[in-house]
Length: 174
Image: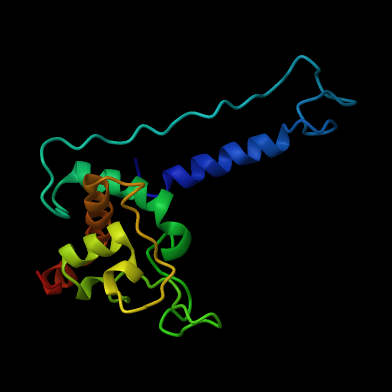
């Protein structure tokens, strides 16, 4: 699936639902003056089929196209709402907000994700930043270990890394 296809499909389905909603009148799916009462549009939600990753996964391997494809879908579903669809993060991500939390950092080359080794990124994603750092550190980054299995976490990290240049991939600590 090409990058960005899933959000377009979701948006299209949402627009159809709005246009054909149950409230009656124009665009509601119910006939009004000038509409053909025999035409009814319905949308049936379907589950997205996730790519399967064959064999054991050993880290965030950007050369594993199945892993990267799975990671792209999972990133869009679990990460993009905070870290951005293009990995751009939230504005002013280095400045704590009024509640004392740092906004979500970018995962592209402008951020600091690539400054950390894969194992550290995996643990942060699995248990959350507060648990990882400890000592009362406060963060909005929850752990996803109860929502994603280890392979899925590695897939998200592989997808993020696949968006970096070769120079940045080489510069990331091992």
